[in-house]
Image (cartoon, rainbow, N blue to C red):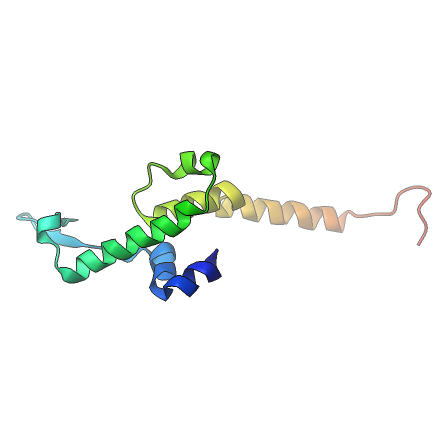
Length: 116
């Protein structure tokens, strides 16, 4: 998937993994809020266009079951993170799986009747 997307457009992979869609502005109270479409400049619109293209590449490779998982996601980064958690698990699950595999390796012994 990664190589296919990078082959299409190298910046798409950055958008999927890093989500450079911070199109924010300061409101009257000085708090960052998302820009509306009217407030976006050409650079902001290019970011959203790249995001849409990245979403298309991700969604086109999914079946109906996978699509139902990600249909509410608004950015390519959200889609990617959702799919990663669904297929690989959270970092905590990965760590636990590694610990379990290591302990199984450490406790590996020959069974009765087995020879070397």
